[in-house]
Image (cartoon, rainbow, N blue to C red; front, side, top):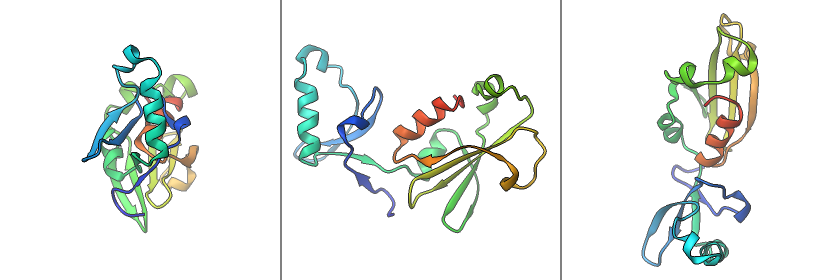
Length: 159
């Protein structure tokens, strides 16, 4: 996949806070769903979005390494086509993994493959494993965009 590639999302992909771009006839404009003015216009905003999706006037950026870094993950190394990230520094302050899983001395590694948007989240609950392959996998799936990535991190109690 090329850097800065986009896809046309389906209407069911949208949720509160979903980031996308909409073509206004001249340029692509960043948007966040839902728009505040929709409350005053009833369903017209939603209908406009649905029609724009059909006309390919809406696009979403595929997840990138840079977006993961902006979320606070620190690059560790790259092998072949996969990026590996260390836990962000604030992770242990904000993570609910400690409460949720009942472990206190653990480390977390995130892996990302930009070819297929595959994200793997691995945890060393014992805090002493040297080989990443020995870590426990708590997520292995696709996050097409930053939207799914953020949602997944919330669902895994990492935020």
